[in-house]
Length: 144
Image (cartoon, rainbow, N blue to C red):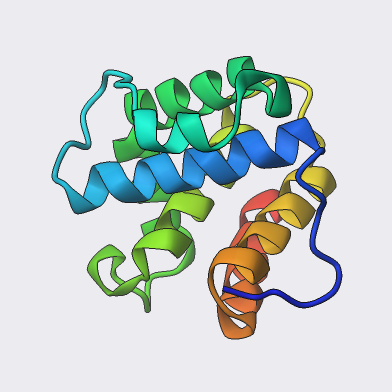
């Protein structure tokens, strides 16, 4: 996890919601509970009280990604064919799914904001090389 400068403060409620969504999707995939229904993960939600993150956005992201994960995975596969999903770091896969869902399905999400947020999350939760990869994949998708 990157702890360098440029890290968004935990009072940015939308950023925290996205970060929690990445953690949720990573946990769900790791525990083979990746299905189309939202389930509470008390350990994550207890870390940050509801007043500290945008719970509505968090739940919207989870439900949207779960409901559309097959289509999201196809978009990833089509735009990064040299990287099979099984070879991607699970945290990077979760970040890509969230960003692509926001680009393809969520109304009113500017591409530039979605890409910047995905890169920030990747820098915080993965590594610099992964940030470049995610930027490239999302850049390719938004050019379509």
